[in-house]
Amino acid sequence: AQSVTQLDSHVSVSEGTPVLLRCNYSSSYSPSLFWYVQHPNKGLQLLLKYTSAATLVKGINGFEAEFKKSETSFHLTKPSAHMSDAAEYFCVVTLWGGGGNKLTFGTGTQLKVEL
Amino acid sequence: GAVVSQHPSWVICKSGTSVKIECRSLDFQATTMFWYRQFPKQSLMLMATSNEGSKATYEQGVEKDKFLINHASLTLSTLTVTSAHPEDSSFYICSARKRGQVNQPQHFGDGTRLSIL
Image (cartoon, rainbow over all chains, first blue to last red):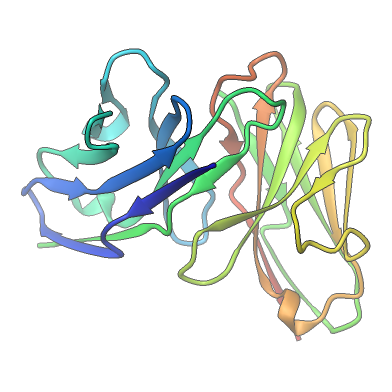
């Protein structure tokens, strides 16, 4: 079984300040983890992925995330927020194999960026 | 890139109508496509997994006869909401996995907003 918990439903930051979106996972096996972003009335765009290679993963738009097995965490960070980063962010876990590639989504974190 | 297109993006129809939503992979072949449902301010819930040339696999609690899925080609899957009612109003999103890339992320469409009056 696998699950993912996003610890904050809403995060508000000022433009130019760091962003931290928290995610903890639970998995019986070595998982693969993703962060997706969703803008209003849009589908999901992949920000970055962890698939058992480097634990520090760099993604698009300046985002990065660190896989910490000891803490079962995969927090998303960005050094400096931009207004265009305001969106919903989903942490996602999956187990490869079994033919299903089924994704388990977190409940999402709404990021608000203020001037 | 890996572009997934959904059509229509927005549909409003009367109760009792059947609505078909298309999901196309524009620049790749997709042996597997996934259909999700998203309620306002909530996360995505997987409805079914669609495999080209075979029957879809539905998640527990999803009515097969209500949500008909067809994946007749490597670039097209359709979701038909039959005899739609107001409680079927939701945001439906599809995703696709590239053929031969089992261990790679899914690529998502932009979603379809379905409103049943």
